[in-house]
Each structure stands twice: as C-alpha cells, then as structure tokens.
Length: 288
Length: 291
Image 1 (cartoon, one colour):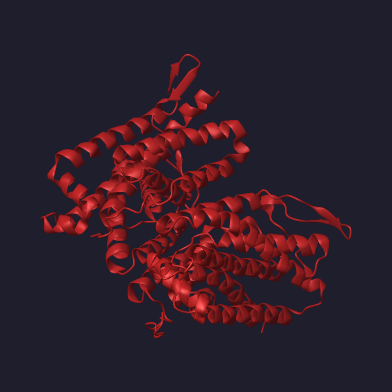
Image 2 (cartoon, each protein chain N blue to C red; image 1 turned 135 degrees about the horizontal axis):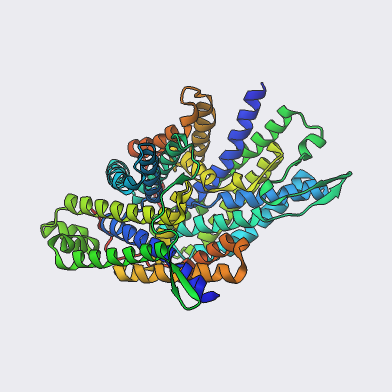
C-alpha cells in the first residue's frame, strides 16, 4: 500500500525537481525570487492548450506553450528584476503583482478559469511490477525530469555558458569581471528556467489531463520549498529534495487519508522549512 | 451615505491588515501570512459573540489573546529565519491556518437556530452589531475609530525608543546585537504586535460584514494588503491607510476597468514599486543623532 503510494508520488517528484531546478537557475544567477513563475507556466500551458484545441491541433500544445513561457519569463525578468530596482524583495513583491495580473488574464480568457483540458500522453498505460504498478505518464514526468537534470548538469560542467552560469551563481561581480557577460547569463538562465518549467507544467497537466488555474501559486510554493531544501548545493541536491518531498507527501496522504491531504502537505512543508533555516544565506550576495 | 460609510469601514478594516504587514516590514522582513491572524481574530471573536453571547469588546480582547498565542508558536519557528525563507514560511503557515479554519465545524443552538462555523461553507449570522441596535453609520464609525486609534498607536510606537531600536535591527542585525539590543526579543515583540493588529482587524471584519468564510483569509487577501503597504509607503502607517484607500475607493469605482481589476491592480503594484519603491509617504533619512 505504502509502496504504491510512494510510486504514485513520483510524478510529483518529477514536477518538483524541474520546478526546483528552474528556481535554482533564476535565484542562483539573479538572487531574486519570482513568485509568478508557477503562474507563468500555468498561463502558457493553459492558453496554448486552449488555442491548440480550438484550432484542432491539441497535440501542438507544448509547441505553443514553450515560446509563450519563454516570452513571459523574459517579460518578468525585464519588468520585475530590471525595472524594479533597489531591494531584491521589492522585485519579489512586484512579481506578486504579475501573478495577480496573469491569473486574472487566464480567468478572463475564453476558458473562464475552468480547468483547461490537456490531452493525455499514454494515459491509460501502466507498467506492472508484481502487485505494484506505475502509470506510464507518471514515469514519463520523472524520466524527463532526470534527463533534464543530466542535461543541465552537463551544460553547467562542460560548456562555457555553464561555466559562466556557475561563476555567476558563486559571485556575480567577479564573474562579470572575468568576462562572463551578465546579460547573457541572465538571458540563458531565464530561458532555461522557463523552458524547463514549461515542460514540467505541460507533462504534469497531461498526466492530470487538465490544467487548473490554481496550479500557478501551488507550483511556485512547491518549487521554492525545494529550492530551500536543496540548499543551493547543486542540481542533484534539488532532485534529491524533490524525490523525498514527492514521495513523503503521497505516503503521508496514504496514512492519514485524502481528506487531510492539504493539511498534512502543508505541515510537511512547514516542518521541512523549520528544520533547515539559513540555507539561502549564501555568502555571495553580489548579484547581477 | 451608505456607500461612504461602508467604504470607510472597509478601508478601516483592511488598513488594520495592511498595518500588520507594515509592522513586520519595519522588522526588516516581508510576511506573506498576516492574513492568517486576520482569520483567527475573525473566527474567534465571531464564535464568542454569536455562539456564546460575549460582548464585542470582550471577544476582541479574546481574539487578540488567541492570535498572540498562535503567533508565539509560529513565530518561534519563523523568527529563526530571515529574508526569503521567513516569507516563504509565513506563506505556508498562513495557508495551514486557513486550512484548519476551513475544517472548523461547530454549531450550537441559540434562540432556536443553529449558529456557528460550517467549515468551507463559512460562518453566517455574526449579528452582534445589529443585535446591539447599532445603525450602519455607528458601526462604520466604531470600526473607523478603532482603526484610527491603531494607526496612531503604531506611529507612536515607531517613533519611540523601541521603534528606533527595531529599525536598527531591521537594517543591520549584527550591529544591533553589538550595541546590546536583544534582537530576538524585539523581533518577537514586533511580530506579536503585528499579529494582534491583524487579529483585531479580523474581529472588526467579522462583525461588520456578518459573514466570513476561509476564502476571505487566503493568500490573495494577504498579498493585497501587502501591496497597499508597499504602494502607500513602508515609511509610515499613514502609508498603509493611503494604499488601502486607493484600492478600495479608486479601483472599486473604476467601472471602466471592470473585470480586469486585478490586472490593473497588479500593474499598479509593479509601477509603484518601479517608480517609488519607498512608497508615497517615504520616510526621510533618520535625523536622530543617537540612532
């Protein structure tokens, strides 16, 4: 029973891992928190699904969502991080305004804020291991998450851009002096984060077969908790934290019943945060 | 007259919540969770007056006690964090409180009818003000006076020695500690003050609008109040009032904007932060020589 619950939690682990990586990139490079990130992903997938299905090509959802997510991500980067100067917390507060505006736009769209259907991928297929089973689309989310982590890890370690990003995460001022163009690094981080997040949002929505308007803030909170829990050590610590949280949530739900799911989930997050303070107090506070 | 009095009352009520966020900001942190205390104040006082016939004043005191109790527990964990983690924790713990409030189902019979909170369906008939025979105008005046008194009180505290010490803690915690200021205690005191202001506001809210449900105390409400403070200015309690007035009066009467109100408000937040991060009532540089 519990083992099955743990397996069911893998789809969440995959989602959280990709969200965590996205936040790792943007926070690491810009030292700023984007509270509208989840909503950007939600809006991209939601609007893309709506446009794709009304034009008769629901399978093209991801193709439409990706550029939209990147565009919105760049907009947030420009408006909240460039335009709003001063204390990074003002930037964070301004992303709340963006969150409100985006959510309202989705609610005002022809979808009227109702769950937007998203075509499933292998939704009826299961892999069976004795008495346990894994849904193929859940496995897909996790596999893609792991592939993304590997790819990103390779990028960070083997390419010049990756070196520039890592250097900027460590100390933005020195990195800039050493020749890593801050604007290029910021652009790369933003585009990567938005793309990874969009893929995550799309795959998750496909596994649920709809995108809910409230996915936005929910995903943002989860991603941020993973960021904190991963302690900014590396991409893999983020993945580890995501795996643990995804599984822990489902197992806890199994133990206390679906009725208490939200309550238990929030309690887990509170305990997780409470147990590890000061993990974001990275000494390099000089940001781009 | 009715629109004016209800507008003024709502401004007064939400100013209390905005003040709560302001006090936390004076401490050097940004909370995303003061709406939880707003909710606790609302529910506790509503339960006491509606189900057990307490007076409004007594229930207000009790709700402050309740909020302080919860704030001590949550604050004990939250105040060990700072910066963004504090903000995230405050958000999550506020959602937790809201979930708990949403599960509260407790009804008693009063004068032949069942009254009390009914979980997510809310808590109706919080009629204490009406039962006391207070007219709409008197109710609004009561609520407005409490808010004005609180604004003045908060201003006074900010200008006092305590307030200035808190400002030092906010700008440089290590320096404050080096100067012998007990930062943990000050931060907790500020946090408890912030929560009790929110709790009192919640008490006013419940009795003025007579119907509450958990959705009134969600993240959106909190972010709105935070925005009022940011737009109005972190430097002054009057700023919280200004920001609240701006939203309640202008945006509500902005029929042109209509259903895109949140888009307009969201854009306003961004513009306000981009143009004047210190808000409308920006505090000038401190002139106290011995700060």
